Image (tube, rainbow, N blue to C red):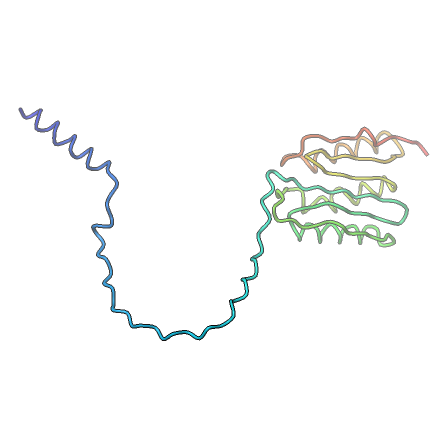
Length: 188
């Protein structure tokens, strides 16, 4: 008999504990105050429609940064989209100091929906400037996790150093490959 009583008690506690609480019974309803009649409003023209609010752009899913830097003569063209304004400023600063005689065309956008990358703060001075010192008529591109190097290098050791240092600089994050198929050795 004790077992039956104990079982029924436990089942009751279990089922009562699983029910959603009824909070409407616990909170008293506010008392309604008597309302006074509002004076009649004068007839006026219909109100103008409210201005539409700006809608934030939809988030980009897994949107990696895209950067393309191309050197041609004394011109440097930068296009793409990265997450950080600070990274953009640093890149432009390093290129300006490294190549003061070049004209820089900046079409690099800051898009806060992009994925942040760890190499973004250091690649300008740590890789881009040394790369273009060795490949004066070349292109660097980071797109969809692939670093693509294009241009001519004077010898095989320079080629190897540029590819190896790209691997070290862009390792981790989302980088999948270093494409050096268009970086060719042309002895001078």
